[in-house]
Length: 118
Image (cartoon, rainbow, N blue to C red; front, side, top):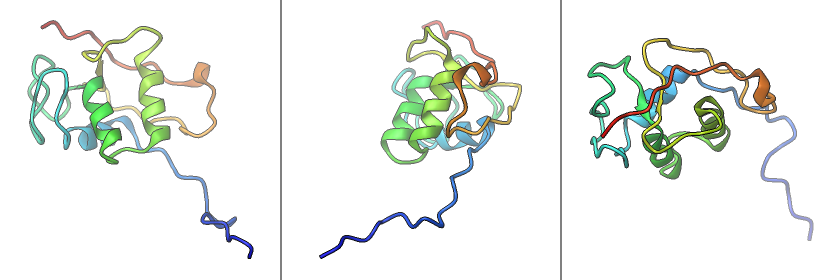
């Protein structure tokens, strides 16, 4: 018996959300770095909606299904070659994310990032 393809050929590629939207989604998860709860800003990165989010929080959001795998890969590319759970992504410069599917890493936009000090 033939098995049907669960993803039809007419399905279009998913579009990448911008960094500000991904930060908003990540804030729905707990932060594994600073222990900030859902809907609370990460500690030591600013206190408003435009402040950045610790990379650990993006990982939690990806594990819980709030952000998709290609989007998390894009966030990791924005983090650069060297990062920790306390690396801050996003911040005061909302960016339009390049297409997360198939865009070479050298074409990724630089992120506003800094290391959080505990």
